[in-house]
Image 1 (cartoon, rainbow, N blue to C red):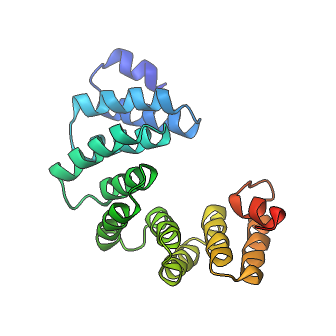
Image 2: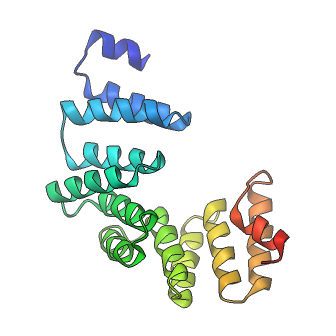
Length: 193
């Protein structure tokens, strides 16, 4: 339907935005990126550029994603999703301290964003800031108790800080939410690490 709308109206902003979202839901990230780039071409904004950055991250094109995230931040420094994308890119590029700075900015702008809390918490744990990471991940689980990924990250943080019992509780919560969820926590607990 969205493709047909775009055929009829080649500069239909909503058509490209919706098409990108539908492709993303289907896991067709390369196709989603193509639609998002068209949306950006027609209506360049922090939001459209930020969407391109997020999709580039999904495709593991972190250098490009970071450039796009910074471009979005340049247009609107108060756009939290661009800071989240920049943080994710930086973390994947091996710059966790710089990622923390971006996550802090994103949280200042959007304090209850679960994705940012999870990524921020995971990065804190990686940097040996376990208690800070645990607090952020607990907050993510409080905000979205039905999110298996948040429970998985919290369980991993408990393992890293030496609390296997709490990690097992998080695994149990995940199994109740989604028995098919394959996160890192179950793998780590099964391997005994």
